[in-house]
Amino acid sequence: MTSKNKCISSWNATKTNIIAFILASDGDVAEPDIRKHLKEKDNIINQGTVNRILHELQGEPACIESCESVKRSRSNYWNVTKTMHLRNIKTCCSELHLSEYEKSYITILQECSEDIFSRNGLKIYTHLLVSTSLFNECIDSGIEALLARAWNMYLCGDGFKNYYSTKQLLSDFYSLYNTDNPDFKLSEDAFIKQMEELYPKIDDISEKPFLRLFEEKFPGLWEEMSIETFLKIKAEVNKRMNESSAYSSVWKECFNEKINEKFPDSSKKQVPKVTSSKFERELNLISDGISGETIQERMYQTILNEEFQDGLKEKDLTVYKKVIAMLFMMKKQKEAFDVSRIGLLLKHFFDHDLAIGTATNEEIGFVKKIKTNVEIVHDYEESRDFKNEIRFEVLGDFLQESEIFFKFNKPLFFTDGCNDSNEVYLKIVNYFGLQSLL
Image (cartoon, rainbow, N blue to C red; front, top):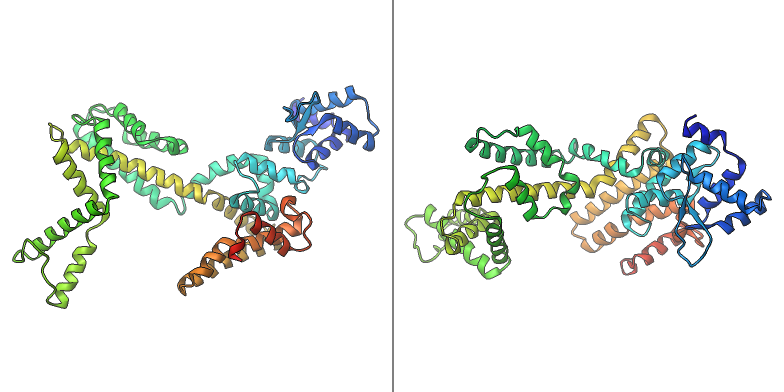
């Protein structure tokens, strides 16, 4: 007999009452409190019987778990803390409606390191309330698994341009190395695949380990410049880029060079005076063409010539910068995904609900209002009403979330004691310390 069938066959009303009581309670639940509840509900008071049932519920498939007491107590504490528990409860005890219990939502949020005390957490909570399919799938698959799947949604959608650019960087680097090392055994496809496998942990990889990884993977990648030397040069470049006088000096140097290239007969000691509208346009084009990247490249060359001339090759510097550019692009892409992954997931389930006809009026109305907020913020931006733009961008979604929270009376932290959605709204605004924007 499978654990699922065993669970269903051995289920009884007492187990249902225990699960319901734990789900309805805040935090960990003491075993004496469970016995007290059962005495009132089922007239079961035998300590051994209750303990045996609790351990059965902790067994396979686990619906609850034993928790370490936060207080000095000899009592056992029990709780539902994982979506796995919710999934098993859903299987073994179908008469319990998990969407009725706030602990179900809190458990889902905790699994993706969120809670109701963050703006992102409130956003997810609201969508869990209005989308039955999202709520059920978070239990059936686990929200972390769903968020991991959102990576391909991102790559095939808004993230494709970044994905393509990053892949081109990797491909260009491989071609550059392979030209000088035709016997290199790692194929380009294998190399790109290995790099893509780094994405889940790219946030934790700093420049030096990333460079060391390439040094180990590609023998002879740089010949005369150590990683430490390159990072020293890079640090000096960053320092000068942040110094206005150094930045300005290099900018003027580049500007004068461009002037002399464009107008060879002009004075080399000063910028020519504007004598016509055409000449003025040329000056503006030259000025606009000097980017931060141009200044940065000039600084790299200057520092290399000033301090690191002892046999160091410019080719090494070029390769180092290409590797760092890859790290930057990968981090940029991962950051963009992290910001959008919740939204991608929520949009997927909303579209799914619309497609199969299960989207509720609350879900459709909520999404329309959120999109309306985006347009209102855009209108304020267009009219240069920055005060209202900021106010509505920060507070706008709270209005819609408050309506949903009041309707479902969840989460109680914000709805308890409130007589209408406006009171819930004010409670949220006060919690986040945004009263000054009202």
